[in-house]
Image (cartoon, rainbow, N blue to C red; front, side, top):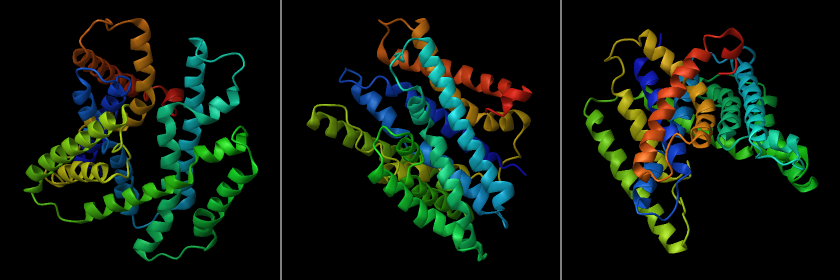
Length: 333
């Protein structure tokens, strides 16, 4: 049965990511620098939330089948990475952002900037069975954990030593970055939080904690930027203590509604299911809005960001939901 609080959490995290990418193109020392930095700093915890939700959905299961669940999910996410990398590459070719001398295969492998999330989720997904076996006391053939924590890191290091950064194998191993395995920690943390009782009082504590941590993160980023003389998101790292606390506060807030609200309706379920499609689509929509000049250049920065964010949110969700109704297209979402 679907859990409404998790659907709401996923939708909120997705909208937060849209706002992160909305403001990311406007980092400069302007009159609104502090506001832009606060928005960018306050929402970093939204990305780890997706890994925490994966932990809840997969680690709480009694059985986690490699052939029926884990490998198909990892292969699908890998396929989506290269398909959408190709889609964005075609878009760049269409607007002349790629020169005739550029290595198209290298660009395809490296992907669009926001697609890093898919390989990271692949690595996290592959690590989940090992954690699941430990948590549930299940036996696992030694070859699988050896492949994850020994043989792949050895391969990764060997490729880095023997091949140049221009080689395709080097680029491919850097897409499936070994440190992405660390995101499984967020998955375990999410599953553990979900197993704990969440008192109603936490519903009113979590938002102020999130706000306090966000203000602190923004202040540290602003101070670092002023000191260094360039925009520096020192606390943007998803493994920073501020991102960790933001993600924890966000998830805990929604978990306080567990078993206290009705099951997800059709619209809410559709919005939640569309979040991956929204994630894949919205950078393309940013480019379209900017190329078509929908927002005047002389518009106040904050108003421009607000309108851009509203346009992206109002268009990406319906487009993703519509795409999921088209038989051949739904597999791309």
